[in-house]
Length: 555
Ligand code: PHB
Image 1 (tube, helix red, strand yellow):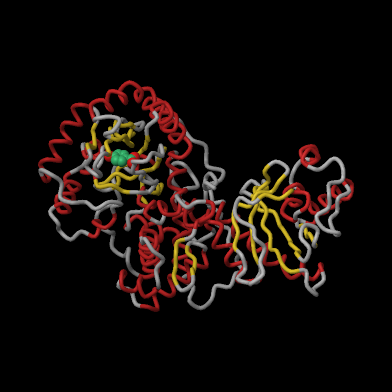
Image 2 (tube, helix red, strand yellow):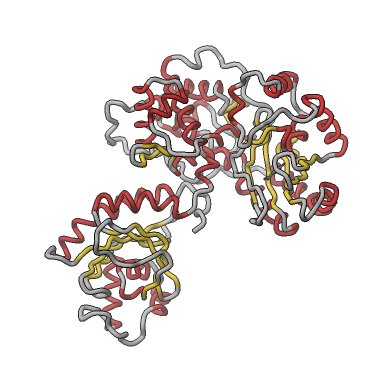
């Protein structure tokens, strides 16, 4: 099972051939993704050349390929990771069952205790978060899903280390001894040499083993304390650890443990029960749609083997117990030999492990930009798309949702023109009189729509405003049929706007996207013809990004 794979990591030494031939681009691509994901700032290709040691032409091809797949995006002359990349981490979290089985249990415990609760899995000589149910407080450190802490600095660490083998202990001692391990830089916090060295940590591991729980008493941050208890998988081995995180202003370790001991037992049992339950095959791993347009322009620099290797990586999340070579080949549409080569490379690089005949994902896939991307806000995800749209059409672009009978702006990028409409995030307008409103009303069932429309003719905003309820009804019907709405100077003299709906992965309309332009000499149909292709393309790209989120990012 997927979560058990985290107990022991991929082989420490790469099998021969893993870095040769066609798998080289996959390794380099994963390295670049890893760096982009952990970089605090957008990276220029020259920065990537410096940090990877790869030659410029290789960096250019890797970046170009990642951008084409939708895993990275240009931001001016710099590159950032893009939401679609989350499909890889989602594949791991879904395959292991963390998202759906453990998440709600962690949240229930957080609600009961009114403290932050997290679940971490062992990953090398660290602990990686797979569930976070934070309580936002003035003084709190909230790690993100995907963040990796060194075992000696966090509460789950001593619990995991009880199962370490000699090789793992040796690696740990090398690391804290300062031997230049590349793993060093993987952690989300600096990892200074622990107090008492390796011996001190061994004592904490033994004590945790006897007590059945472990603590972090301000090891990471002054004031931050945590208590962790083990959660066992079906084999009886520790699968993950449940942590309750608090602050010295509310608890000390002893009182926090008392709280946890009273409440966590039932939750741990429920988690262990959830891990034992067979899970149905995921019908949809968020964002894992491998059907790429076969006719898309690949371009001369496109690294097909990187694209294929990443498709194989994503395919591992399609079945809870991992996939065989044949199943991966089938899921990706690749020849078996190609799938096999990629799987072996992924195993060598620590992203997957072979269990019997099946390859399962390992928590290291969360290193691929997951923590960064999973904490983006709705606006973070939306704004790059609105900016690109504005660059393309040279008019303002906005996103709005329905809020009662009004639309409410949730994101907006003004065109850099001197005359522009003063609208901000939060601005509300009556839905019936706006293009976004008509698109949003068009998505509602008849009865709900009727309830939000004026029953009698409202006061017009301009001489062009349609106010007759029957006419408005017909215009909204037309928006439903056409998939867009155009409002021409009905709301504001001189302003013409065109809107299209934005849907979630189920097809439900969640917002409307529009472009507002001057009602100049251009005819209204010409405006629609000019703007609609850009609006539709933007909506599709944004929908693809949003579909990478298991739940929509916070507004
Ligand atoms: C957390 O969930 O943020 C957390 C858990 C254990 C620690 C520290 C922080 O030791």
